[in-house]
Length: 149
Image (spheres, rainbow, N blue to C red):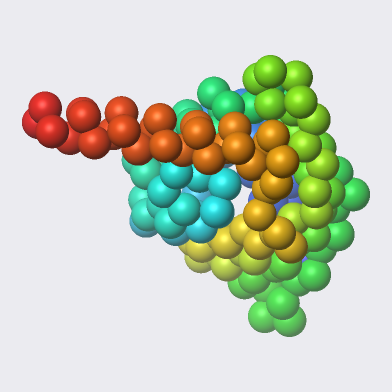
């Protein structure tokens, strides 16, 4: 892929997250894609079903998403790109979260095959507490659902 194609793919992905368009996000991933992001209850999501579940959690937790000031660093072979951005998210309760984030993206056949998010720190303060509480509630619900099956 060209650098412009890599950027367009990542932009489609992040723009779909911004509008909470789960189908649009999933359309940018291969069927067996891996998404690693410590913000989610299951930080390593393998396959579209796991990614969709993670998106459901994230979309429920955040009122809005923003991925601004995007900088792209494509690989010479056109299969990978590193993206640095500043996240401007707002929790459902109205608390804004602003932090830098880096995504390392590898592609296959024009789609994202692997994406890993990196933050320079864990969320702190009330945002970190709420995120931790949200993850705990999610894990308890999932354990109860698994126990029923």
